[in-house]
Image 1 (tube, rainbow, N blue to C red):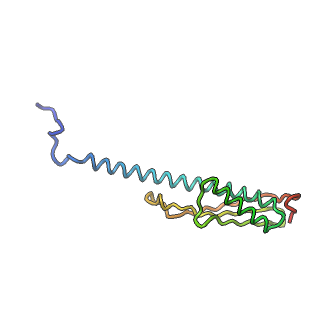
Image 2: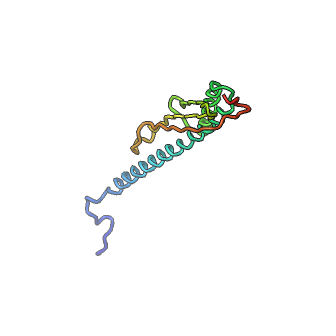
Image 3: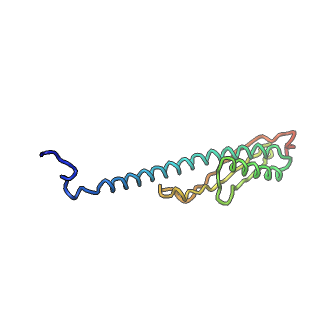
Length: 143
């Protein structure tokens, strides 16, 4: 019989399917970790920007700069929590009112990436976003 069957292969080729499967699974896991990490960075950037805009809108309605800071912190924390963004140590929020009548809110969030570090990501990534809104002259008092 001239056909080549499973038992006609040389001994050195046996068992390679298991090694190939292990390498394939490892490569697929690394790709999956990379995709998850890249999506987390991209999405957290948009989420932090949206939270900064919401914080600026809240700060623009406050009567004083101190009240604006408090409102901005509460709104930013709630917005990030609603979007599922967990900032290591909580978000850093700064609300500033300018004499020109703008309320500017800057949000800094350290996003943890330790669970996707096998794909080459650092343990954390800092995402910062700012947004400005015109102070409401009626409710915000303009000062």
